[in-house]
Length: 337
Image (spheres, rainbow, N blue to C red):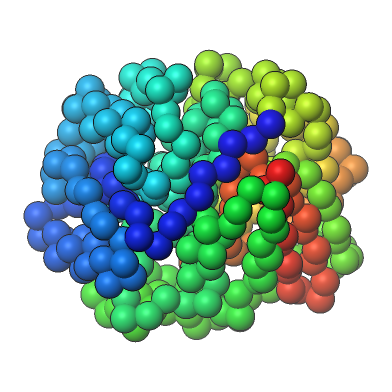
């Protein structure tokens, strides 16, 4: 059984930095993002960690964990939205009091996805892999990213559908923000092995493969127990996004996931667009995807709206998902059951 939080328009958003904070010269971006949330009617509770950044983290692990624990246990907060990802969130996983978490959404991606997956696997509370708070600072929000609010406002027992974007951002231009923040210049095409149409069903789990792989073999990556306790051995649809690793490392990681049992009883694999995926000796990401499809005899979809080449679908860890891909376009329906 999965526990689904519910976002309400007049609720409070907790802003904390369990990974990286925002350096002084970029504070104006965070202030702008929080102001946009207030304009939507949300209250803001902002922690101290977000304003700091030193040696690849916002603050020492115990300080980050204490602030996060306070917000996770606060009934008045219905959404926790870190400013962005970072590098060393893994340091705080053992300091979180999982038994005291009050159901609420945690939203983010990149390094934050290690926290999202750990919470869902440990507690059965759904978490949201999607936009970072800092990317909601624009005059407007693109149609794909904008769905985060609709998704997190979905009631238990109901469904919500999202569609692939029309265009995506290939390169970041932080010094030239558009009204959407992103520069959506290239046509989005969701790709499949052999260009076939694809349909898959199962429970969504995933995140940034660079960091969630570090949960393998730890108490925070116990997929087997999660399966037995919370989804009664239903199939899993894994979604991944690659921030920095090359294709050989990607393949090694996926083999490790297989050996650890993470990919058992999977009904499909989804991979986000990536500026990484650097080929090794002509071994490409497409080669990896082709091998996976043949090895597991399941559909593999890639270049989806997930990760560091926005915009992003909002994926809910634990939700029941239906994925349909036809002619380069995708449709994802998530049911909160």
